[in-house]
Amino acid sequence: MRLQGKTAIVTGGGSGFGAGIARKFAAEGATVMVADINAQAAGEIAAELGGVAQAVDVSDGDSVAAMCAAALDAWGRVDILVNNAGITHERGALEDVPEDAFDRVFAVNCKSVYLTARHAVPAMKKAGHGTILNVASTAGISPRAQLNWYNASKGWMITATKTMAVELAPDGIRVNALAPVAGETPLLASFMGGDTPETRAKFLSTIPLGRFSTPGDMGNAACYLCSDEAGMVTGAVLEVDGGRCI
Image (cartoon, rainbow, N blue to C red; front, side, top):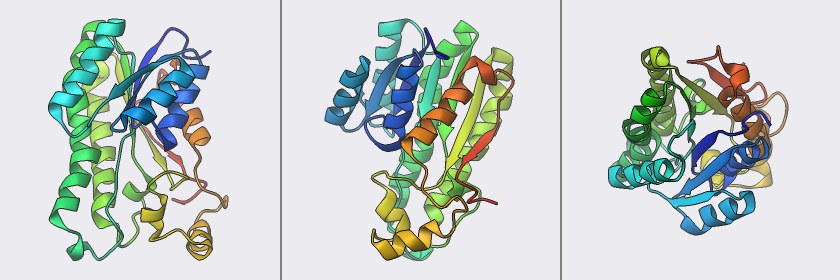
């Protein structure tokens, strides 16, 4: 029960890595707000965990403000914020990615971190403590061709994590990131350029441990970084990638 008594918002919590993180947090004693653009998915996971469901578009300021206000109204504080929601563009030459796809990737993957910080950090500062976890990607550390702008957005998130950690440390707020390799999430086919036995085999050949990241892997790593066990850890980017970045 490493998160006993803590409150947590997990964006993109209705599926994939976010659902894995939400489940682990609840199992470790946290009260979880499952926030997702898919309200039905959020509701199903929240009901399973005895948590709170919240529909949110993390790229929209009013929507993020409403999410944070709902959490503060319900709990009076936010101990943990997990910025997990993310999207990618289709694989292709960097110059061929449509402008609207580029804008959407940076709005969901980057602007969301700015927006949640605007609306959650003041309450954390007032409380004198808090933990923020940004879900980045191995793509931001060891990028691959044809996902250029997605790679760049995750590199942005890693830099944001480190500068947030430095600035917020005096306020008792820790900020870390996870860098998973691709996993069984709705984005997998886009990362691989299709989902066939051949594309899976090719992708898995680049991962020394020979498998994808799982929601359980992410939940375990997230739990550590958001628990008091990691009280001296801030600005870290933990690779949950089976050796992909070596």
